[in-house]
Image (cartoon, rainbow, N blue to C red):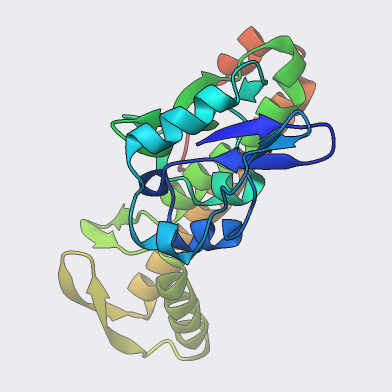
Length: 240
């Protein structure tokens, strides 16, 4: 698609094959004009939506518009439906995906995208917030990733945390409590002492994860430049 800019209005010269039909229908009966002149007898009608006019027809009309300003700007409605070509990899937390303007590739209008590195001084505050979000994501993964207690792998997802907290409270109230507990690697029979051991271990694990997140967030807050920010190691130091 090419847009012919005029002082008062923007008109469109296009091949039907370049446009989704739903968008093309917006252009029915639109005169093709430029520099105050319209192509006499040339209108888009329903027939054009059903079959692509010959390339020669458009070339002839474009020759009649010779000398007018032709630009690659597309209407916002069309930009919204032009598919985006995704980057070859997922961006890191310190990167963004930038989507370009539509371009014609292999006969189709698409928007290409590329990964943009945000690690520059003007983006320091934005990167701080992104690192905090990434720290929270890592904390959640560590918190809910499970721990080993007495040789048994104990689940620590939010539901398991709630369940073991209830069992811990029950064991405190009744020292004779016995339960069948499903650990990550199978069932184990737990008495009150083992239940409290499990519950205490899970509690300490969860609290240590949040404590680590707090320390890291405070480090982020006081960091004054990009190199120092990127030097913060938020992947290690988790757990009791």
